[in-house]
Length: 322
Image 1 (cartoon, rainbow, N blue to C red):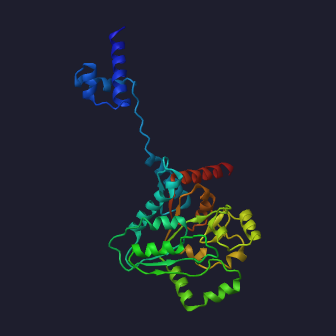
Image 2 (cartoon, helix red, strand yellow):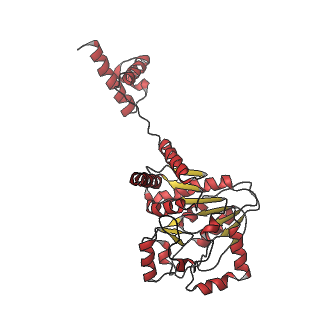
């Protein structure tokens, strides 16, 4: 056995104890009857000779790349991809909600009006808000919030939590989001208070929302708004909803008759709000997210890493087909 072979064998042993067993260099020196400088030189030799290869997987690099791609393709003013590779699905919503809350705290200014959707995602954001030194903020619901069933939609909890965080009173829209008849909805819109709330929403500086899916489990399908035939039609023709307005893959309205029965901000008025923050924490929402972004309903996206990767994959597939 040559001196070089002995050196390599000793370097392997030192490297295993240091990197795999997490021993300190002083302990390795004592265990192998070596000096501390010798252990240090052997570790350096192990790296230089390729015995030890160090690779750093930085999730921030890949998330930044995803964010840059989404921002460029959809002409967003900001895209935040939340690292989530090692996150359990049950914790995903809290992680993204915290990131969205942090962003909102940065952009909200004195006397801003914040318009809200509702649902679990918005509620998760609300739970993480802790703004400082902001005054005169108004918080308003941008769509009806009363359900026809006991299914929880987190509408009042969300607007109350936002209002509490910004030390203001919530402005409710205490109506069903979808009426049985268009004429009823139009009559209600003429009420002085309802008109005030709707106009307040149209003048919002910031909108915070997510998208819904058309899966059987979608919240809107459990709130008593649709007949079975209507639900089937939406599932066949829509990819999801934005503020309870159902859209196709290009973000265009599906089922105008249903849309005309829907109360709250319409999608053209939504596009006029300066800061439109869409928050996504579920890969099942990728199709609806793509449609909403394609139509320009959001100019800020906060999204989990897995969903962002699926969204970019859809873009790449679309480019390949063209």
